[in-house]
Amino acid sequence: MGIKTVGKKIKLGKIRKIKNSPRWADIRKFGIKRAKRRRIQVTKVKRWRRTRIKV
Image (tube, rainbow, N blue to C red; front, side, top):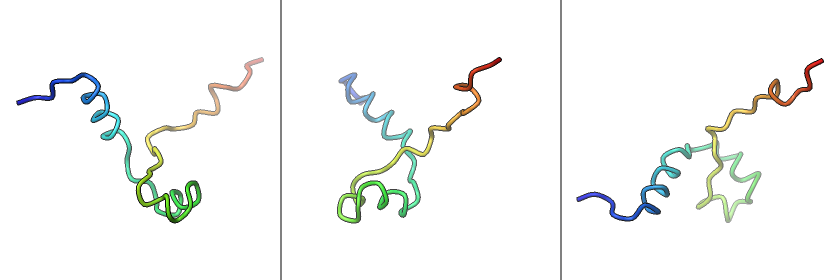
C-alpha cells in the first residue's frame, strides 16, 4: 500500500527535509502563538562566496 497521489509524495518529501530549528528561532520569526505549528527550514546553507563578484 503506497501513496497514490504525486502531490502527497512531494509534500512528504518536503516535510522530511524540514528539520527542527531552535525554539527561539521560531519564536523570533513567528511569535509565541504561531511558532507552535510553524517551523523554519534549517537545511539551507548560505554560500556567500557564490554571490560575490569575481574580479
